Length: 84
Image (cartoon, rainbow, N blue to C red; front, top):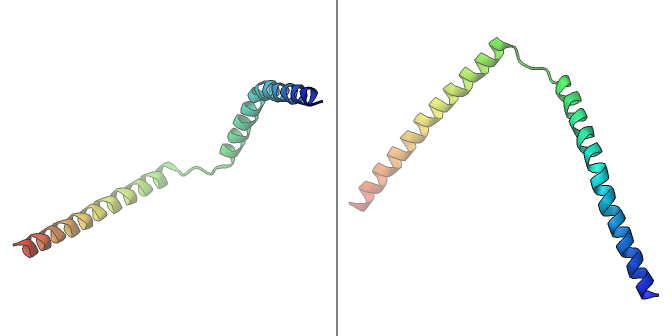
């Protein structure tokens, strides 16, 4: 009885294993089709908007770089003042 049960489990496992690889291509193809459909729904920015967004990001990065530099220089000077 136990031997037949183990054989049935092995057969079931191998069937699932084979079906996994049989259906793998179909699942990948379906995912790619869905991805293309979603990308068609996206509203892409115009060239002018994209340039404006890029300039805003670059300006923000520049300002934050200056702020971080100021905090770093100030804390460094404070530590040197304390350790002297």
